[in-house]
Length: 392
Image 1: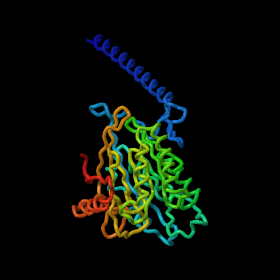
Image 2 (image 1 turned 120 degrees about the vertical axis):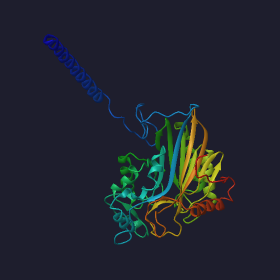
Image 3 (image 1 turned 90 degrees about the horizontal axis):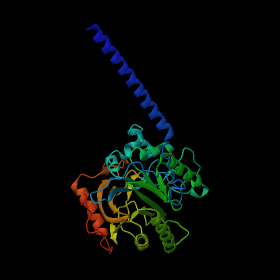
Image 4 (image 1 turned 45 degrees about the vertical axis):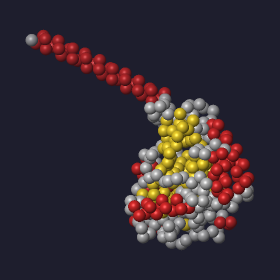
């Protein structure tokens, strides 16, 4: 019995030694693999291409696409209006936004706390970022007479990164509040945070579900060109973008403040973008919701209104909506697209604007949003027939 036990002990020791060697070999092999496989690089050029390295990944290109039963891919895109966070440096004392931020324990994420799950449950969320992020600033001489100059510290970018906002449009009338230096700072902050951005000079590209989504941005405010001249620019840009990408989204900062319906030049530009090959047109600037058109099977959202707006703590109209669309793409072709809206208030409160966009729950308020959109779309030739609140 003792000899048997001794023999068993020897066998167990030998087995343990082999396991230890094997584990060490596996561990060494895994470490070597980590050293030999660098993290994927992120590159974005002005024309939206990947650059010279074919293996370079665009933002979002981390997971393989999930295929539908017919072999197509589905991508859900969320769009919201003006995100203007920070203080107006033209007003002395503590700003209304800073006061609210203090109430919220200094947590900048409060502005999206009630919609974070919506943003996380899509493939791409796009916002119009209207302001400047910089830790130092100088007011340009030509801006000193402006009533509003919006500025936030660079740390405020966490409101985007922590809440699944992957892309921003930055062609608007407040991104230049602090001149070229302020604009450059905001761009750098976005790039450092991995947020895709677009303006009139830069096409942003986001890759998800195996699709490359291009984003182009323009504005019609105080420009040295006419709407007809802008139409020519948009036509060339869209056609070029469509050659290189699966989907093209065009954003316009246009119209007049407080308007509930688009003007003739907006209608012309929106439809022209679709004629050139754009798959979706998004609009903002009026601070009010505008109707949606379905032109040649593509949606034109004339105004997404405000999202989180620090310019006024008691706006006369705090209603807005989140726009969502789903593209189904098969073999490079869009075979279907549907949409829904999520009626919201730009505040979680009714009595004042606390900058926290919140979905509406009272049916009377939801009906007000729907009626407003339908009423102001009656003169549009291609106004959508209804505004679904859920996916069809």
